[in-house]
Structure formats: C-alpha cells, structure tokens
Image (cartoon, rainbow, N blue to C red):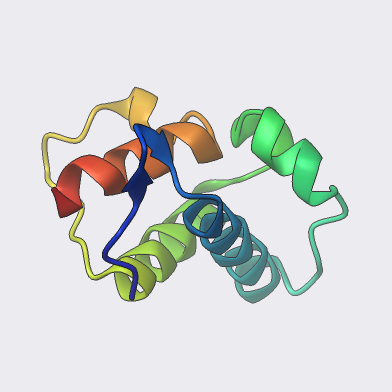
Length: 96
C-alpha cells in the first residue's frame, strides 16, 4: 500500500505504475487475456479506448481498492474513471 502518492505537487510515478499494473491484472482476470497496449499507451489513453467493459471495470476498481487501501464512494464522478491519471488523482485526494 502506498502512502506518499503526491510528491512535489505531482503524482508519484510508482503510483501511476501501480495503477497500470492493477489495470493489467483486472483485464487478465476479467477477460482471460492480456492487455496488448504498452504502459505508455495505457497512461495516455482513456480507459474506454483500452476496451474496458463492465466486468474489467469492476475487477479494476477492486484491484485499486486492495492496492491502495481506498474505497470508492457512491458519489464518485464518472470522470474519475476516464484515465489512469484521473484514477491517480482520485487516489491522491483520498489518501490526503
């Protein structure tokens, strides 16, 4: 579990890497195959562009909760799941 998510005003690179890893695990668990995008493509694109369906999204949310010890609130904005960067920002806000 990570506690220092923001350093010098920017989201820590290890946090972003962990979110990418969570996404890869979720994709493999939900669909039984690996995500073919590179880490850079995952970081730059939207999660929707990566082909996430509802089953991948659900597994991804659980993976992020387990990795960072945060809980998704019922009122979490849909935009929070737009990209790896938006998920990282959410985690940073939750851990402050």
